Amino acid sequence: MNFQIQHLSTLSKYAGISFIAGAVNHGMFSEQRSLITAALGVVFFIVGAYVETRSQSGKAVAWGDVLGFGILASIGLGFFTGGLQHFPDSPQRSAWVVPTGFFLSLIALYFGNTTERASAKAVLWYALGGGAVVVAGCLAALGLLGNPAPHEHGHEDGGAHQHAQEQAAPAAAVATPAAGGHDAAAARTVVIDMNDSLRFVPAQWEATEGEPLRLVVINSGKARHELVIGQEKELAEHAKQMREAPQGHHHHMDNAVSVEPGGAAVLNWTFKTAGTWGMACFEPGHFEAGMAGQITVEPQHSH
Image (cartoon, rainbow, N blue to C red; front, side, top):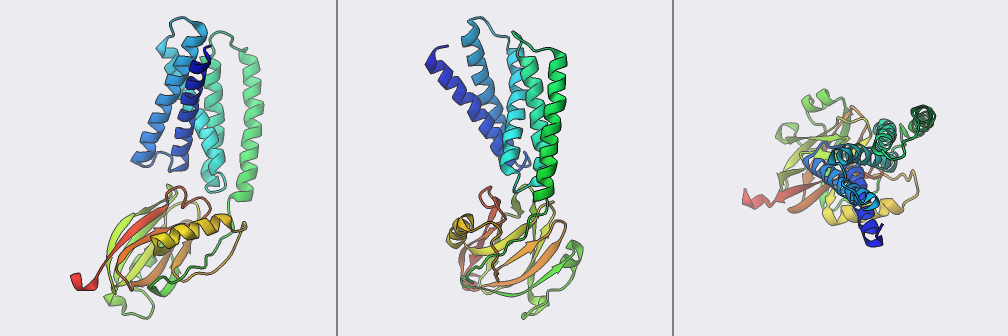
């Protein structure tokens, strides 16, 4: 094969795998961006596979074979690599994503190789043996990482003031009046959901300077999440500090809540200054995967 063509086809195929792995890491196609990223990954891989196959054979290539092989192979390899990358952050999800990727890529390679296909018996034994090793490894990793130790952060107040924090079940958190230094009846309630798509819902909302807020933070996922409030520049700097901190680093904070899967917490909060504020989750890998949001705080005199 011409070297330039080989290089370009390889780039295209691996770009496709990386796109799909990125989609796995950023929400398992639960959002439009991830779906578009995964679709582009499939296209990149198919184009690369077609160019590679055509250059090797010098003959016409059946698009049906390339498509069938390309779709399965790209998704399988993307799942396998993306699941491995994201195992420390979402072990429950990766525990089934990685084996799925292994078997999809195996099927794609077997049926896509029409010139020198291995015997079905040999492939079956390999699938059983290799699959057992992959599944066993994933279960072992799930046992070690399934309940990662909580981490806590030391954040500066940054001009905002937190009155109180309480843990509660989701329904009770929404229904129970806020405890703390300000009048519960005067506090506006904002419900924020955190999920395993590594997103806050809503990701953007508005508040007023000096307005008492009762933030009901619900974790609807299966992994631990947290809500940290601060200036966007401070949050980015803290993300850098967390990446450099030792594994399992613990420190306290007064501008955040950490919520276990299926739980909820109430954070009573008042913004002291107007401007653009941010939300973030600093569980390992979550902020880097896009688990952040924006709060626009209007000056008090504008209302």
